[in-house]
Amino acid sequence: MGDQGYAYTLDEALSTIGFGKFQVGVLAYAGLGWVAEAMEMMLLSFVGPAIQPEWGLSSSQESLISTVAFFGMLVGALSWGVVSDSYGRKKGFLGSAIITSVAGLLSAFAPNYISLLILRCIVGVGIGCGHVFTSWFLEFVPIPNRGAWMVVFSTFWTVGTIIEASLAWWIMPTYGWRLLLVLSAVPSLVALLSYGLVPESPRYLCTQGRLTEAQSILANGAALNCKDLPKGLLVSDHINESTIEGQSSESTALLSSTKNESNNCQRNPSSIVMLLSPNLTRTTLLLWFLYFGNTFSYYGIVLLTSQLSIGQSECDLTTLQSDNIDDSSLYVNVFITSLAELPGLALAAFILDRVGRKISMEIMLVAGFVLLLPLVVHQNAIMTTGSLFGARMFISASFIVVCIYAPEVYPTNLRTTGVGIATAIGRIGGMVSPLIAVGMGSNCHQTLPVVLFEVIILLSGLSVMLLPFETKGKELADTSDLPVQHVQVE
Image (cartoon, rainbow, N blue to C red):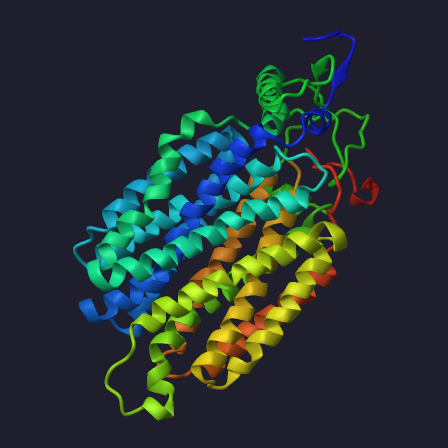
């Protein structure tokens, strides 16, 4: 293709073809993956409260339905990250779609509590692949306005939560929770059926030395975008040596394309060792806590919405004598607070590429902390919904920025593994969150759960301050062999 004397890099190719129909197709499939994950997670807000009286469950048993789902996601996040870095992003998508769709449909026919727990745990394993969709889409996006496009991608999560809240409001009162589980598995089934239409990540292919395949995908993308690739052949300085024996590779700093002229003849160390190497230790440990804190807080707010909505009339002294609880309040409040993520997304899109990732996270976390604070004591229904709306708006936005920052800060050869491990650590927060929000927050006891969520949000803000890198406007790196001091800022 072109003059053999010319060569171009992947970033040069992506910048040349720009963002067009090719990336829109990638965005649609990655967004479908996030819609599927959001719907499967949001239904936990409705299924637990519905099953509790039907099957005579205790508060602890109800909270365990969410906890086992997060345990499955922990396993899935670790597994799909390794699979995607070792065998390609598409292999992860295929396995995830099969597991999620099959187990999701089967869980709708669960005959008892134990079988439901097992199937929801398996669903959790499937949707644990969500972070791979983030990394995959990121690897197709040109550097200019990358943050804004990643926020657009994150909108699909919010769309999924709104769809699920709408479906629950429509389906649950008349048809029950089983039909909701069936409909919630539909996006995963669609992702499975359309799997063959999506391309592998060219950046991943380049690290594996499969440059011809990568160039073919880029050529198809250029044609779809009505652009021409640069003259010459695609080249990569960052080929994974564990894949191509005897071939030396040049390496980059964490956030740059600075070349290392010395050959590295040793086999690559394990991913976990590389993530905890001197170059990455501080970033990795802080990201682990940020994922834990954001997951714990986000799902805590979601589950608190369910608990406080159901218990509002019980806790409200003016209606204490009433035997009837307005069941529709659960669907109304969850739907309203789901809408809160839309202004959070708009704010993130506006400031992310202007002030950077770190300052954006600080703004979101501080605002979320302040808005959740009134719920330390019991409030009326309007104040409760308003506080939860505001807190969810900012904590969800903070979570989105973290999910953008992490794939940017990790190199291609560690990206899905690094983000997968961080996501898995976050799922531990998700496992603990139902025990706090549901187990400890029942019977109007909301003070201690809210205080615990506030402490974690505060510590998350401190962690952001300690992060050593800002990724705004930086090229994605493929390897991380050089000291971080060699970071090249555009």
